[in-house]
Length: 346
Image 1 (cartoon, rainbow, N blue to C red):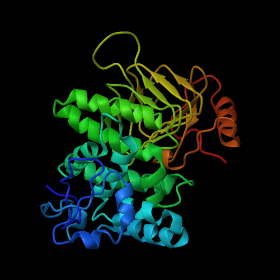
Image 2: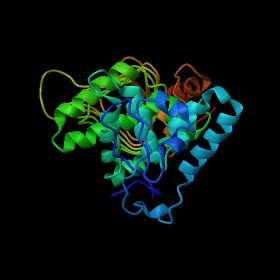
Image 3: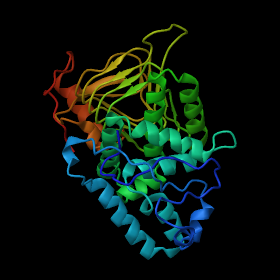
């Protein structure tokens, strides 16, 4: 299988990280028009002919996100000439998002024992053969663009946001884990942790449309399950308890929002659309569309939003949570709140 909208994409790599590959049909003089290409350890412009496009929504060969990334890179190269070489090598020299992402990840994660050429070969071969990953990298990118006000553009996410990059590296490691290549998957996990400060076990199961905002200090354990359209801020821990094997990590429902420095321990369920306030310690199940806060976390109300993860309102010190807490105490002083009893008030 091949990457989306890419008819000339080639993922065969040179044997040395310092080698510049010359595409078929181009002579050395043509390549020398861009001498800065030789500054990058991987130059992903190859000769392997991929199969036709994969995803149904762009079977025409048109990938709107990739087109937007290229246009953004062209504009930025004009505004900041000093970055033109970087933007060309990272985005403009490539034929598709899969190839560009593989290039960026390989160069960020390379080490003396994991060469950039080897890493790019791994990333690209996994991504172009996995339809689910191809969909996920785009839905995740859209999530960052829509939910993170600090995300200036699609291209800034793929080039600079470590939460996005770590998430996509995890997706490749997860694929390798399922293939039985656990040692390589763990090597990638270790390298991602070193470079980005984000530790996601390759056996964890994570859905699509995920936002890892900032990402620093995020830890996701081996048996953790995360649904679609979840937003996770920095410092979140989805950890296990004790030494038991099997299902020992949290299960996060679709559309949930986990605020900064939230800790969730054990095989517990965070319901669909639930909101966990920043700094909370969660030790028991959280109902769907509920709001919890505190150490240990306690129920303070319910929300009417379909996907709280899209609002990113997670600070229990704000007027929002204070109003909800007051309404909860006044409305149901001696009972258990039901969904709809307490409205969101700002």
